[in-house]
Image 1 (cartoon, rainbow, N blue to C red):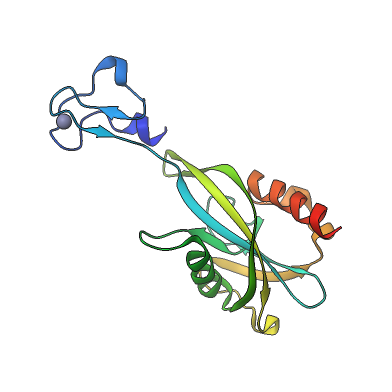
Image 2: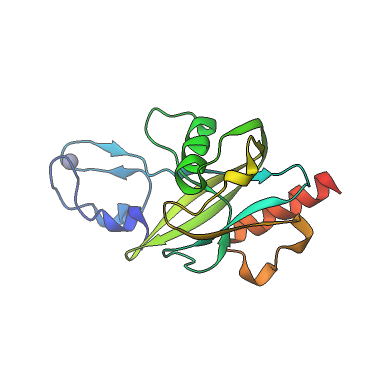
Length: 174
Ligand SMILES: [Zn+2]
């Protein structure tokens, strides 16, 4: 179920949505005139490098994609720049500070959580770890590992958007 399908009543006046507006974006209320847009959520993640050119992978502790390999990142908060949200998530998940942050690529993604499929835009950055030896599994991370981009097992990658971003990274770094 998408967020647009989930809203069967106007969130302001509680009028039922007109039949021809069901599951549409924007929600158009016939009762109070509210027009409410459903937009993708923004997430930002980083391919964090060490001096040997390896990237930091995290083993996910929770669904979605529990047990699969991801890169540190997460959802951007209200009022937060994508770069800052990415740095915050990296700090929370693996305890690292970053330098040389650069935008790499973005892809659409879907995030399924408790019966709702949220549309997401995943922003991928590249960055260098200030002190790579300090990487440790923290929030929602089972373990961390450093691997060369070419040595990430495709079947273990958590999200399709990450697989596409990894291909882009490999193209760029040869
Ligand atoms: Zn209304």
